[in-house]
Image (cartoon, rainbow, N blue to C red; front, side, top):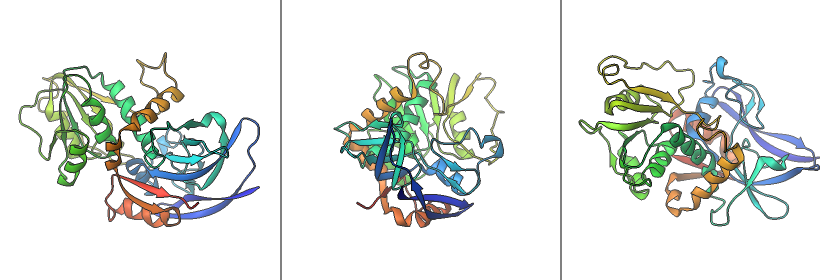
Length: 318
């Protein structure tokens, strides 16, 4: 047996590093030594705060999760590590310095994607699936409301479709430089009479959702990419919602988008997400790094807002 260290949410708003024993890798298994993990801020801070609704406890389980909500629970899904033969891999595994998983549960990181950037793979997979769910087409007028990591990645992908007229909207002007680095036109205010063909909402706030609905043109789609946990969210379905015949659609990465499901499995989708991380400009999304041993304090600071971050990366000792 080998000793490993893992981050656990022991109760809402309190985390700790725990030791646990892991068995040697068996046939069809691999042993991974973690190099980096990433904190998916929206979902993980809701988990840390104990805000996963009881009705969603089963749906929100991540691969290799241990324990149950609200805690103690070992949660996370952005781990990059190295195998015994030196190959760098990505796995949807909680924050842990060493782990053993079935060989099919790791995906090779492409040679042109640095390990330190590969922590964005789960977020890129979410963005890719959202674009599939959105029905976006070349030439569309698109607004993305809320420029956290997922919103920025959705806008980044959308901006690369031919002829797309795009604006990224976030009231926080500090998001402007990241948007500019990714080639996304940025505004802190919703443009007047935008008449969008597609609006993606990723702010995680009721005000952002109201803004998204106001930007949609007749019979347009508003794609809800935020997850609000146990919070009640008012939705303004008065005003022009019915006269414009708007479509409010959810997206969630737990299932492959229906139009792609006959040909794409989870492995193919994750491989594509990893390959899309070859652009060095995406490093702008990782705006902080901390050692694994400080993760309990780091998660608490992210959850209470005292640490502002897009993607915060966790560095593991050699």
